[in-house]
Image (cartoon, rainbow, N blue to C red; front, side, top):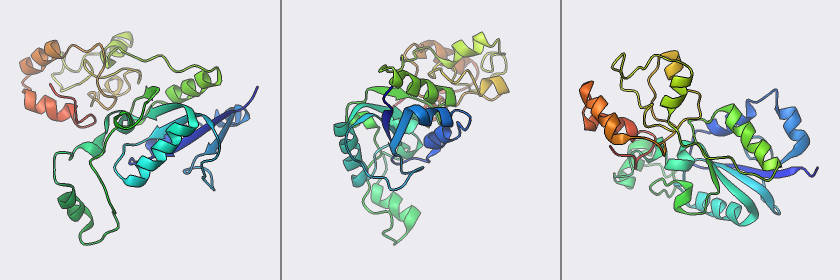
Length: 247
């Protein structure tokens, strides 16, 4: 079987999504037998785009000109472009201040130094190029990334998840943190796929995977209001990872 040729790039982000793949220590030796990570700046050098790629896995959002150029180059040279992580899919925490003055924000962070260079309001990948698939999470689960690569080896893209985290909580027979403990849990609205990792540990869902296609926002808001949370509090929590997500 011909080895899969993959490019992995990081834009404006924390690199946690790429690190999750590198943390698959037990599986990496097998992966390297079937996958050529030709362009992977975080793990390999030199990192130079060259030739065509079967797929590009891109972490992070767009906030700088060179990222825009890299993304366009990846789109031109790869068969599939996959947004990996919540920043790539929705903008993530980097986009929290999108409604504020960029120059003022730069000065607050860097002062008079010009080290930051030219920046723009962070945007998800789909705002600029066609995205063939999305793997959400902050960061994604190891299993999701391994399943993605296994599917690519067979020429297939992952089947999109549509159900919310609440579904996985029910499957694990967890106590509902929202209805039973009155915690501000976003499980009813957040895309599943994490196996209800946080609620299973007694930690309310923060919505890091973005909105679920099958969410019922109106019904969820009624429950939040009954538990003493107003729409502003819910909205702030929703927009922490997905700035365009509003109650």
